[in-house]
Image (cartoon, rainbow, N blue to C red; front, side, top):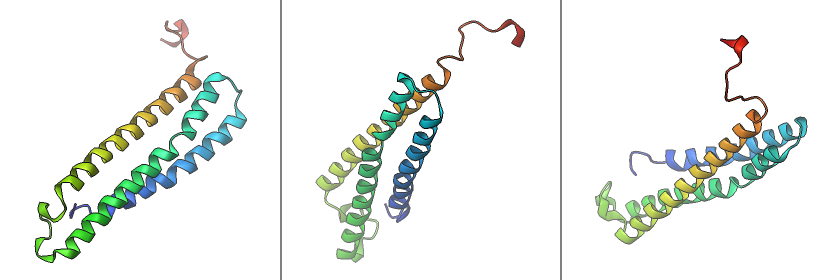
Length: 132
C-alpha cells in the first residue's frame, strides 16, 4: 500500500467522475439516433455503472485511510504487514475483489450491448463481394 499511496483513491475518483460524463454523452447520443430495444438496453446498462464506480471509490478511499491510520498509530512499522489487523485486510481484499469484478462485468455488459446496438444492422455473416 505504501507504494500506491494516494494514487489508489485518486484513480478511483477519476473513474467515478468519468462515469457521469460518459453517461451524459451516451444519453445525448441516444437522443440523436433511431431508438430501438438495443439502444435502450445499452442506455439502461450504462445507468447501472455509477453505483459500482462509487463503491470502488469508497473502498479505495477506505483502504487508503485505514492504512494511513494504522501507520500513524505505529510509526515504527511503516510498510509492515502487521500494521493492519489480518481480518480487516482479508475483508478489504474480498470486498475489493467483489466490487472490482462486479464493475468489470458491468463494463463488459455495457460494451457488449453497445456493440450490438451499433452493429445489429450493419453486419453480415458473409463478406460483401465488392469489398474484397
